[in-house]
Amino acid sequence: MSDPGGVAGDQLRAFVERIERLEEEKKVISDDIKDVYAEAKGTGFDVKILRKVISLRKKQPHEREEEDAILDLYMHALGMAGPANDA
Figure 1 (cartoon, one colour):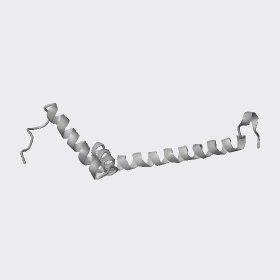
Figure 2: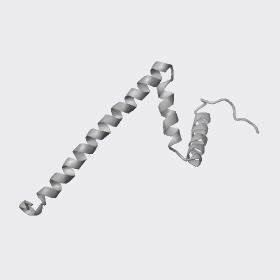
Figure 3: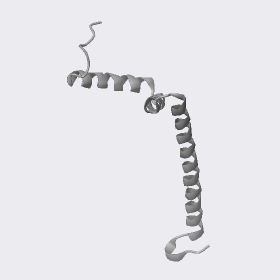
């Protein structure tokens, strides 16, 4: 193993090669995801909404509720929502 300037060359090379392999795998997976969205679009689904659904499913219910409440508050403040519901 070479050790120029205190750098373990073989170990560094191994890390770089692992990262390169993972980056390639990530690209392949990313392309597969794009293909699935294209297929969904071809079937008539709204891809923008589908992406939002995927994003929402990643969040915990309490996180979604909090975001919805803040969004509702902001929309009312900007006059973008109807009158507040009296429950």
